[in-house]
Structure formats: structure tokens, C-alpha cells
Length: 455
Image (cartoon, rainbow, N blue to C red):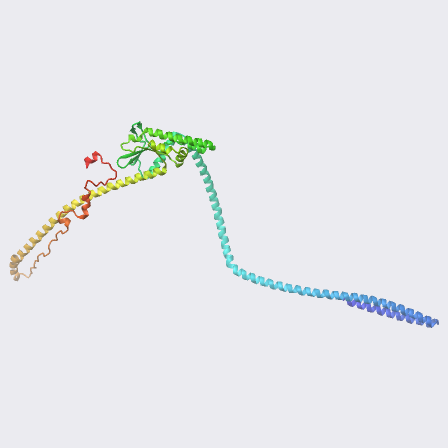
């Protein structure tokens, strides 16, 4: 639109200039003709006017051409701008179309993905619910765990206080002795021995060194006994572990070994075995912990040999339990031997009664044979004498007399050798061998004079 306006303006300007030039030429000619001037002057003036008009026309044309060139440049720029705008519009439209397609494709793909992910979504919801439940359970468990930790801390604190109280109490000799006796009794009972049956506590005896009272006396098979002491000192051992000074701890452990050695010497001087009827010549010194004995042996490696030389056996719960378990097993074996002897006695008595029963059976068989013979004799006499006469009365009575058959079977006699010969069968020969004096079924049981007299 701007280009057309510029062209029209240029044409109008050119037309106006032409008209003005024509008017000027016509006027100059009229003036020349009216004034009667020289034609050369007029021609010159006319040519000057024409030149001026041409000059103005050329200027106007140049201006118009310049404006036309500018307009053409503007037109080209506008065309380029329009083309660029059209291209941009096409690109924009294409971009929008492509984006629309992409959005549609993305929406379709998203829809497909959502359809495929629908089970996953359900599972995720279910998993989320489970996670929530687990979280609730975890929170509850965390609370319970915190409560248990609090209770554990309180228990640990109480245990620490109890341990401190026990440590303080064990420094007293009387308390330490009672603690050792209680632990010893628990150990003996766990091995299967019974109080007041297989062992006794604080039994008074009379030894060569005077009246004594060992902490425990173990009863062994064969009326044998064994003394155990439970009052070993270990106060220095406790102080050594409570002390934070290493040098001080070593000194206390050395003193602990000396205390144990002095206890061994004192226990050896009591000679408990001399106050028991039948006892091995040693006394067991019960030490309630392996660490107590090991600490003493580390400080004094000769302590064990010294104890053996004085007739003292240093025993910890491990090896003493093995010894006590062996004693309990020996008692069981002795009970089995006593039951075996009772079985032997019952077998011998049963065998004698079977012999008596066989005699009665034989007498009963002979009696049955005599009864069958008498019955057959009675039947023969009945057939020969009574029924012959009775049949003669058959014509007076319709009642028929049934025949009486004799007994053909014989009483069965005893055929086994043990019931007829009086000899001992092989099955019972072992019971007779038990009466041989060289066989002794007892296990380490000593027979006293009273038992021999009773036997």
C-alpha cells in the first residue's frame, strides 16, 4: 500500500511539473509576441526556461527515482519480510502441528503406559499400604525395643549393684563359705546325687586331728566316703580384678596364691579322711570358679604339686562335676546289680515252683487215666449186664435206650525233659551257675559280718 501511494505521488509531481513548464513556455511566448522583443532573446529566454523546467523535471525525476528505488528497496524488504513472516508462519504452523501430533502421541503413549502400569499402580498402592503397616509395626516395635532397652539398662544397673553387693559380701569369710557350700550343693545335685542319700552337709566326724565338720561328705558305693571342703579364700582375687593398677593387681594375685597355698596346708592338717570309716586319703578343695584356680596357678605354678603332696585335690566345677557324675553312674550300676540279684533269686524260686507244679500235673494225669479206666469198666458192665436185661422190656415201653459209648481218648502225658527227668534244662542252667562261689555280681560292695551272717 505504501509503494502505490509513493508511485502516485511521483506521477502527480511529474505531471504538475510538465504542466507548469508548458504554462511557463506558453506565457513566455505570449509575452514575447506581445512585447515585440528580439526572437533570439526570446529564444534564449525560452531555452533558459525550458532548461530550468528540464532541470526541475530532472530533479523531480531523480527525486522520484530515488523514492522509487527506496520504495522498491522497501518493497523488496517488505517482500523478504513477508516471505520470512510467511515462512515463520509456516514453520510455526508446522511446529504447532508437530507439537500437537507429539502431544497426541505422548498422550496416547501415556495412556498406554498408564494402562500397562495400572497393575503396577495397584501393587504400589498395596505396597504402600503394607509399608504403612510395617511403619506402624516398626514404630510399635521401636517403642517396645526402647522399653526393653530401658528395662535392660535397669536390669544391668541392678545386676551391677548386686555384683557389687556380692563382691562386698564375698570378702567376708562366713559369707564366702556359705556361698561356696550353696554352689557345691547345686553342682552335686545337678550331677544326679541326692541330699541325705548320696551326700550329707556339715556332718560331724572325729578325725585324728580332733572333732571336725567337713562341708560335704560324698557316699561312695561299698560304704566308702569322701570329704569335700568349700571354703577356699579368694578375697585378694576379687580385689585384684577391682583394682585399676596393674602392679597392684599382680601383687594381689601373688597374695591370692599364697592364701590358697595356706588354705591347702590348713585343710591337709585337718585330715578329714581319718574320721571317715572308709575313705581315700585325700580331701577335695572345691574352688567355685576356674578363673580363681587359674590365677593362683599363674602366680604359683607349683601350687598343684604342693596340694597333691599334702593330700588335697584342687577341684573346679568342671572336673568335680565329672567325678560326681561318675559316682552317680556307679550308684546306678550298683542298683542294677542288686536288681539283677533279685531277678536271679526270683528265677530260682520260679524254677523250684515249676518243679512242684510238674509233680502235681503228673499226679493229675495218672488220676485222669484211672478215672477213664474205671469209666470204661462201668460202661462194659452196663452193656453186658444191665442193658441186655433192660432191652427185654422193650416190648412194654416205647422208650428206646441209647447206647453208652466208652471213652477212647487217653490222658496226655508230660513229655518235656524238664518235667519228667528231674534234670535242670539248659535255659535254667545259668541260675544254678549263679550259686557258684567264684561268681560275684556285686560292684565294689563290701560284705560286712552282719551281711554274711544274714546270708
